[in-house]
Image (cartoon, rainbow, N blue to C red; front, side):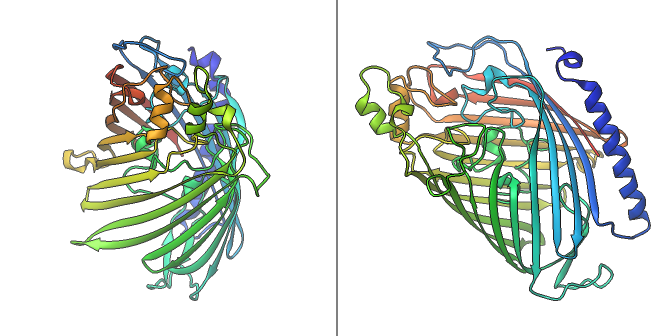
Amino acid sequence: MHLKTKLGIRPLFSLGMLAFVGNQAIAQDKRTDSIVPYTFHFQQTLVTQWHPDFQAKYSGPNSFQTHEKGATSITSTIYAGIRPLKNLELYVNPELAGGQGLSHATGIAGFPNGETFRVGNPTPTIYLARAFGIYTLPLTSRRTTTDLDDRNEYDADDLNHVAGTTPTHYLRFIAGKYCLADYFDQNSYSHDPRTQFLNWSLMANAAWDYPADVRGYTMALTVQYRKDKWQVQAATSLEPKLANGPKLNYDYGKSNGEVIEVAHTHTLNKHEGNVRLMAFINQAPMGSYLLALKHAADTPDITATRKDGRTKYGFGINIDQEITKSGGAFLKASWNDGHNETWAYTEIDQSLSAGWLQNGQWWHRAQDNAGIAIAVNGLSIDHRDYLAAGGTGFMVGDGQLNYAPEMIAEVFYQCNITRLHIALSPDYQFVLHPAYNKDRGPVNIIGIRTRVAF
């Protein structure tokens, strides 16, 4: 793919310059120690990946290709926000996405590029990623930034966050279009594929089939209650009309997603950590794996058994812990019942992941980061029987299945060139049993991520 002609670098460069000018204006205001009631940022991330040929006894319609050229994806996002009232924030994020993932983003449940989508057309497309508002009701008095105490914290300007004070005891409402993972299932060391690990199994609790359209966004209402080091939050949201679909289903009574999470921040040997417990249930016109097998004359088809009222429920735990001043570890585990078809995220019914993220100050590169992690993904019995009989989902399906857990290891190094606002991240991933199949692989995936952010 020729990036200059296919991905439209000139208009993207113009967006970058616009964001740079806006960011400089904010920086000037910061130097005067005044808080401006708006935020403006820009990011652009390119991910190029390639893999050498690997062995496979057979391949199916959704198999990871044994031989293919490299693939490049691109996203460009503008983060704009304003605080028109003391406790009200409004945000909008126009986004451009294009290119594609390896094998059209199929064939590995824990897909290696968290910056690509399962969209068939690689042509760059502009769309509205987020448009939402946040209202915070302080349950303690809100003071100025020069009068902070244990009841208030100062939060600096950031992506989708206007600088200002936040009470440590509040009730907050978040409504509009956004990604549920913006607020749920957070992790200090493994969450953002633009700056941390790229693999889908590592950027979220992978068995949480979180409601979203094909690009990862939904209409949702989130309510948060925080008191000091405890936070409870719950959300209700829309599901897509079809599995992996681009359009949301506004028939809320028949299609919705509910999630609740309890989080606690603690200190262990003077190092901060977080523990988050999650439970979720999704309702959509999902197909049944058992019924697809029962009714199949030949190859089972999950789409032929779709029916309103089907659900998927599950749980997750998410832990991050600072170990030293320059590094920390994470652990995630999640599970869903796996009776009905995956509807939005990826075909994983059980997942366990762990890893380490290290700041580069040990080797005198404090602006850099390095990470290493592993993930093990599994399927429910119903799901694996369906795939073994030749069935396919929207993510995996080799036509046959010699089942084994999908195992993934990832290592990356992020080199930050701060003067130019550029980060370069070489990345390597090893995938054993891609799509849960002993008869295929292993796969070695080599990549480079380039990110510009202001």
